[in-house]
Image (cartoon, rainbow, N blue to C red; front, top):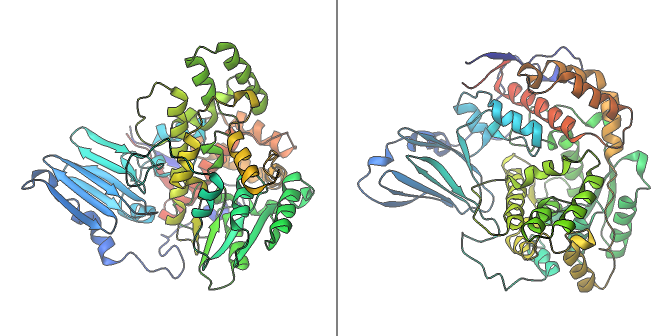
Length: 516
C-alpha cells in the first residue's frame, strides 16, 4: 500500500542544506538544458514499435542502435562512455540520456527492496533505489525488450560484444600505457600510493602535462602509502602534491551544481576533490583524471570469498577452509562477514553458465566495477575520468588468472605484481597498500555526530524499519570514539540517507512515496 515518508530531519548544519522548498533547475551552473532532440527522445520511443511492418535496424543516436522484429527489440550501446536509462512500457519504451532527465520526466517512488539490498551489501547508490522498472544500458552492452520483460548482456572485457582469444593475453604494463589518453591531454593522477595507482604512475613516466595528487589525512602524513607515493613521484619525475582531506569536507551534501548521477561515496567529499583537481590542471585546460579504481574488483583483492567457491568445487576442502579463515581475520567483523564482500559477485546482468563458480563471480565483480566507473562521465564534470584498470584488455588479463590459483600466497594479484616488477626492473610493486584515510572519516563523524545521529534516527531507513536506529547509533558512537575501522554497514546507511536527501532537494520534494 502506498504511503508517504517524511524526509525532514531537525538536525542543524548538515541537514539544513537538505531543506529545499523550490525545484532546482540547470544543475551545473551555466550548462544548457537538454537539446530538443533529447527532449523528444522519450516521446519518439513511446510509439508502438511492436506492430511494425517487419524487421528494422536503426541508428537512433550516434552509437545507439535499435533492432526490432515482431514483438521484440534489441538496443545496442556502442558508445565509449554514454549510459542510457531505459523503461519498458506497454506501447514501447522510453529512453533518457542522464539521470537528470529521468528525474524531470518521471515520478519516482522508493523501491524498498533495492534500499534493503543496498543497506545489506553496499556498493554504489544508484537509480534503482527509486526507479524499480528502469534499466541501465551501459557502454558496450545490449538490452533485449520483449513480452517477457527485459534481459541484458554486459561483457566489458570484450569489444563490441565480440569473443576474444583467451590464449592471447598481453603484458599489463603495456596494456596500461595503451589505455592512457593521448599526450596532448593535461592529466591529473589521483595517486593513493597503492599498487594500482603506482602502476599508472609508471605508465605516465616521461610524459609532459602530468600532475599527481595524493589525498591525505593531515594527521597521518607519515603513513606508508603517502611516503611510497612521494618516493615514486620523485623517482619517475612526476610533479606531485599532497591535498588534505579535512573532516569538515566529509558527510556534507554537495552544492546544487552536482548532478544526481554521482556515485554514492563521492557525495561525501567530491566537491573539494573537484576544486583541487581543477586547480592542479589549470583553468581552461582540457583535463583527464586517472585513478586506479577497479583494481580491487578485477583482481579480487582485498581478499574475496570467490576463490573459496572454486576450491570447494574442486574438492580442496581443507585449503578452502584455511583460506576462509584468513578472510575472517582480514575483514575482522565475524565469521560470516566475508560472504558480504562485493555482494559475492551479484553485479550487473544475467550470469553466464560456467563450471567454475569462482570465474563467474569474478566476472560479476568486474561488471560491478565497470558499472560504477561508467556513470562518472555522466555527472556533468568539468573534466573526463578514465579508469585504466577497466580497459577491456586489462580485464582479459585479470580473467586469465583463476581466482583460486594464488590462495597459497594470500594475494590474487601476485602475477600482476610480478609482471610489473619484471617489466620495470623494480620491486616497487611488492608492497601491500595499508590505507590511511580511516582517521579522517572518524574525525568527521565525531565533528558531525549529532547531525548524523539525527539523520539515522529520522531518515528513510528508520521510517521504513529497514534498520534499527539503536544499532546504527552504536556503530556511529564507536566510529566517533576512534574504533579500528568505520563499519561498512554504517557507511551504507549514511550513504543512503545523504543521497536520498540530495535527490529530494533536486526534485524539490519534502516527502517520498513508496512503491506498491
